[in-house]
Image (cartoon, rainbow, N blue to C red):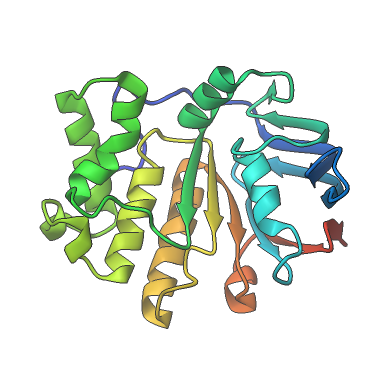
Length: 241
């Protein structure tokens, strides 16, 4: 299997040892209106370089909101958030987009592949978005990642023609295209059968161990959570010890 590490100029250098820090982070919706609702109530969280952390909790507890804030897809209402050593709460949208694109990979429950694109083309998309134009190095990097998730024979297959487990492995390869310091996985095995779920989890674990990539892994599966370095419980918008 190919090395997970990027060799191309499109990937960003590694960042400091503490990959994520949240201090007293709160998140409210409909701020200033009679329907204002606070979803996160003061979250403190630190994720170290190379740490594999499961996030568990009941539906509606704030897990996805927390992941969206860490992934710079949403902003906290209050508190401080640092990603790869950069304090983010004062950054404008363009700076957040650049920081996210070069340092964070996403794998979601629904793979969000483009069905009319091949597996290889889907994996190339983050690199293309960063550079603005295709290059041979991007195709080489994407092919290496496809190989690494065990899908070499399916490189040129349309994503819509792949099985659910194969699609999720392509999504993982795509998440690694920029060699991110942080990988966010929101129920990535939730729609898969037991064998496919175990395959995807083991691929995540291998990336974590071989590359030192930090992982936040949201799951409802206690068996998978027990195989992570640590587990945090989110209940009613708070982290419970």
